[in-house]
Image (cartoon, each protein chain N blue to C red):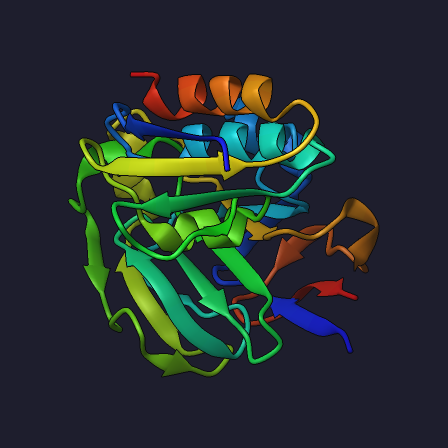
Amino acid sequence: MPERRVTVQAEVGLHARPAATFVQRAAQAPIAVTVAKGGGEPVNAKSILSVLALDVRQGENVVISAEGEGAEELLDELAAIASAP
Amino acid sequence: MSTIVLAPVAGTALALAEVPDPVFSAGMVGPGVAIDPERRAGPVVAPVDGKIMKLHPHAFVIVGADGRGVLVHLGIDTVQLKGEGFELLAAEGDRVRAGWPVVAWDPAGIEATGRSPICPVVALDAASADVSGIAAGSVSVGAPLYTWR
């Protein structure tokens, strides 16, 4: 399955604005998207509750995965959001 | 099954659109309502029965038995305070009833740092249509704030 591994750069981690932006973009996609922290269990990237529960801090790695039409472009965008400072 | 979400603090209910933060005001986190709190130090209470899934000094999420999560964010940009001005009264993972204290704070102290003490109370992963009966005007702590269908 196509995936991207990125380091979260935002000082607040994948919370607040980065989390909301990330989830909003994922939720627009017609395909399933997951995000996992480090080697952990993937969660639904379209759920703000799930993403906040992951509790990704600045400097931690996430793996974003999706499969299907538009997956590569979607993953590029989500990776850019997750790794934005 | 519907959930009555209670006011975590006393104050004046405001539409999320009035929150001075584009992420909350655009509803990107979810639908709900904000409270402009009374400028009086005191406890912030759980808006629903459930488990404290995440507890930061400036924000917490409580997840009910039905899996619904409610976010209470204490002021805007308050993550920058790194906990200063907040006191935890519960622990992450605790099960609480609606109305139980979770954090103590002083909204006037937050305001004195130049930040807004407005508290968004957000229904996570909900659609706007799922939230109704939104309170307007003055609300007491623990009073019904909205219904999440």
